[in-house]
Amino acid sequence: MSFFFPIGSLTLPTVIYFLAAVVPAVFLMHFIYKHDQIEKEPTKLLVSLVLFGCVAGVAAIALEYAGEFVLYRLVSPYSPYFVYILAFGVVALAEEGVKLFFLKRRTWNDPAFDYKFDAIVYSAFVSLGFAAFENVGYVFRYGLSVAASRALLAVPAHLGFSVFMGLFYGLAKQADVNGKPAQAKRYLVWSFLSAVLLHGFYDSCCMIGTVLSEIIFVAFVVAMYIIVVRLVKRESSLDRPLDDFAGEDLTPPETSTPADPFEASSGESADN
Image (tube, rainbow, N blue to C red; front, side, top):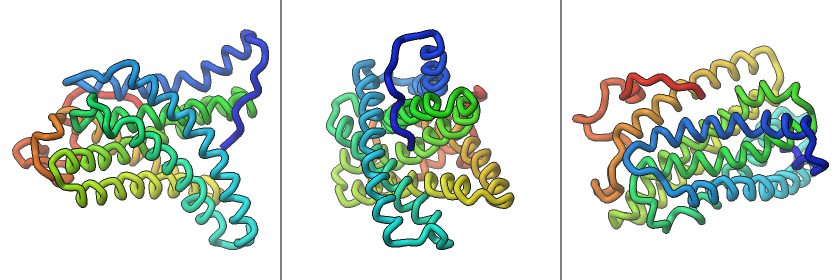
């Protein structure tokens, strides 16, 4: 992750750079927000989640520098394991860890958290706040040349990780509401691990830099985007209060589930 951009005078180029960095995250927030169909979340809560995402970005910078400091002293950069430890054990662990920390701190006991899909909304807004903060740093440091690629890859990837985190986070909250604390803890662990594994795989493919890793990376990104869009549509269409079912499993009731578990429940198409 890059350090945040240096603040200078408010000029037209500065505004253009800022918009190029932030608009992709705002677009994806709108995509998630419009799928929250039953009960829209309070604006104040959503804004606070974006700000918590930015704070998570600052915390992640510190944790990643500390992690890299230790890693370089324990493992040779020429080791075949170095990239994987860096991707999974430093970057993904730090970034997804701080996202989940601030997500849970802000929303777990909030009275607005009363529907399952709320968890995906909250997770996405924290993650996209994080992504916007990170993206501003990259665009101001490296220029507009990185804006398009990051708008198509890095920012939507953060959304993808957050949807899986939010899916399990919602199940954790539902289990907690229905008096199953042990199950809630298991789902919280999966909320964290699912995001870390996806993030680590994404980053490791980028870091390896071989032709094969680039092919795998493209296939992974395309598959994740398709699955995430379908998951968002499915979870939106099946949304209901957290106390409707006691400790439900990941698989919704058969009467409400399409034959394909990732089949879109709505004919509406959407972009990342």
